[in-house]
Length: 519
Image 1 (cartoon, one colour):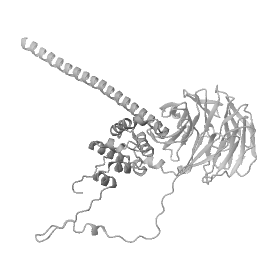
Image 2 (cartoon, rainbow, N blue to C red):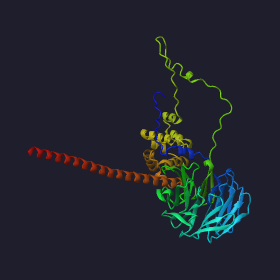
Image 3 (cartoon, rainbow, N blue to C red):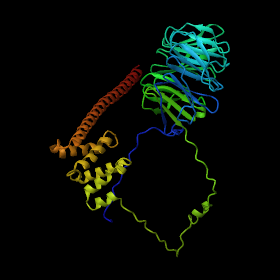
């Protein structure tokens, strides 16, 4: 062992997201629970009162779930046609729902039959909400109208006909019972005042509006439509503050965290983005398996529920904090025990004895020491090593190549062994930190096993994938070199211009000085 130097495992920087407080906070959820509904989940709404149940609107049914239950605790299904939306009242005791036949129904959570039915819309109702006084309901429908209903009398109070296309979203102010906002496919968002019988503010979103959200203070309004999420200052008459374009497809839903410091948006691109409401930058992102139609957060962000187009309801619960041990721990030695003698000065008669620490070689180092190169390569290609620590496998391949025995280690392998090598190359070849080493290894494998291609369909398929990756990576590096060449030319031109301008400046100064001397 005295003459053998262990292989130095090169450490590579891992390219990933920066760990922030938002990352830790929004990643602190358990594995999602998936619930299958009867159709696309068009609306999810949490009750603001304990026990914080939530209503899920899918197909012709509205299911009420407990926050931790996987089965509905109540179902409302007395609709003539598809139900599109359902919203809890502020006290959590009543639920209002809109359906495709144009009806608006009011339910008591403790019962099953509707308490009130409001008839007036002629087409599907996609937006319903309670006003701040809890005694009125606002609804928006595909007949281009927005209606205000009186709950005790079951009568229509006002009708607004200012939209020129489908009204697909809306919300009421939490502070003022006379103010409410609607969004339409005519690209406009309007704020109505029941005291004036008309809209008081109208803003142009620029895309069909899918969702609107009022901040609890009522000063800011958020609209979503197309790929854009826009924030408006309502205290300044609807002035645009910021326009966000972080999704690749249509944004369908909006949600605000319990603290009001984070804004969430869901989109058909299967992502949920989390924005800071101070800088309006994306601080976190969630990925889902299907396009997202609805999104809701529970009290204190304890649960996040997402409804998707494939009828799957994804429910994530926050992890509970670790409980402190009730059993008293054994008292450990004080800090001074460990630092005792740290500053002791050696005396003249003292003898210093150093106990050499025994170094153990890794198994692959033992194989390399004994020139078992194929065995060493097999060890680092095991799934426990090649998946968890690919940098070790790459370091061994690099060491074998340095010794000039990489071709010998890769040759003479059967179908199972060569498949393991090909799987590792296919999985890691496109990573920039491994590409220089693995491209060379891939070329050696292709040269060795090219004469025997066609004997195994499994190996042939992986060889085609590997060959495509190598060619793609080579083309990518060629383009990078061309880009670097163009940048070098630009930099050289800029440097030449700067030197020329300096020279001209110096010449002009000398000319002025000569004129002064002559005069």
